[in-house]
Image: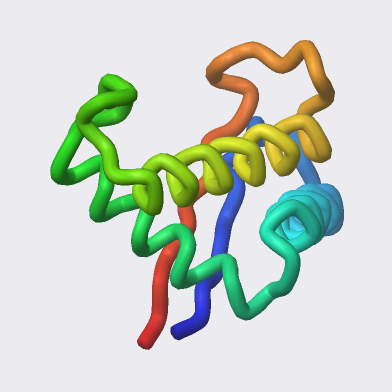
Length: 102
């Protein structure tokens, strides 16, 4: 399984700036998770957890494995957003669309 991503950015952003932002995001995700090959399976597991338990499940709702996956993905996503938008980013600065491919 592989993944692709696209960042939605303001209209005045050049294609080159978008590419740089997407590469920063990708690099941060892969760095926090440990390897590029781990992004798609961890993200897929994260999506399943959110589908079953919601965006902010209580600590008792998850197994230890689910909690670990959720925390790993959230840490990777936070690092990726900070790599692109900085540590004091605001919602609406950009949306990231991650797609999984078999």
